Length: 241
Ligand code: BJW
Image (cartoon, rainbow, N blue to C red; front, side, top):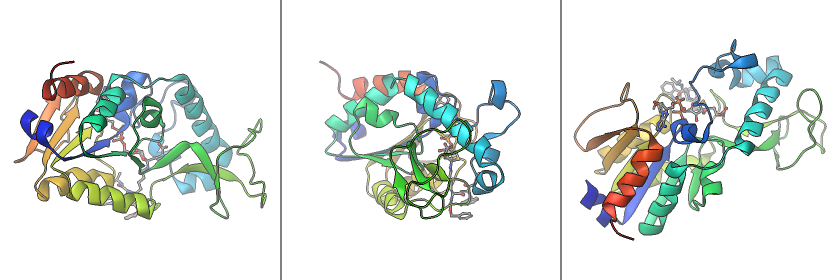
């Protein structure tokens, strides 16, 4: 598998919340703590939740935005920057909305579920990069006065078509596919590794626990935290300075 990675002309990586765990950002399905302990993330990341209580949902995202602003990319993010420099055709698909891959220096990044750093008008869908934060509730669109919402993909919403098509093509066309730090519960991202395997790629699953992860021919498991496993993998495939 190391030789296959070293000689690969195309590598695709899918990351989930686990890669940012070592930056101090709780994974999506980690229990929420403190003021948020009585909510489940699955109940806050929906259009219905925003319609019911926009101030509650906005304040959850505001708390997460502030947490991400204080966080730094970790060794796992940096190992993927190193990998991108070594592979001729490299695509990084992330389900994360924290922006840490780009902050680490990754260039070819597909953000499947949007970004915490942007908002969009809940009426007209226009993207907004900056806004003034009101004391209570979401800010309003400067053009039409409707509420702004986070520019992320909630349950039941369709993913950005261009990003999804690019991700599916990168899964289909790669020689090696790394699936890092994801529970593989949420579609359509969860199917990408198995599409890659079906198309002939070697799939490497990196996670401290293999609970719920698939097994099969061409599927390899590296059990451990991404911040340790990824640097070791890159170092083993390309030893030396
Ligand atoms: C470490 C680690 C360390 C810890 N190192 N690892 C087909 C079948 C059934 C249902 C559906 C289907 N197709 C679509 C659906 C419905 C739904 C869905 O998938 N539901 C499932 C729950 C069953 N999908 C959708 O609604 C999607 N839309 C869609 O498909 O539209 C068309 C359609 C709609 C309805 C029906 C049919 C078709 C949209 C999905 C949007 C997901 N959005 C969220 C929120 C984003 C904004 C936000 O962050 O607030 O995205 S949900 C949440 O889950 C978030 C994440 O990106 C995503 C994935 O989670 P992830 O990253 O895997 O995190 P965790 O916490 O689950 O796992 C962390 C992992 O890290 C664990 O494995 C740990 O072990 C590991 N870990 N430390 C490495 N140090």
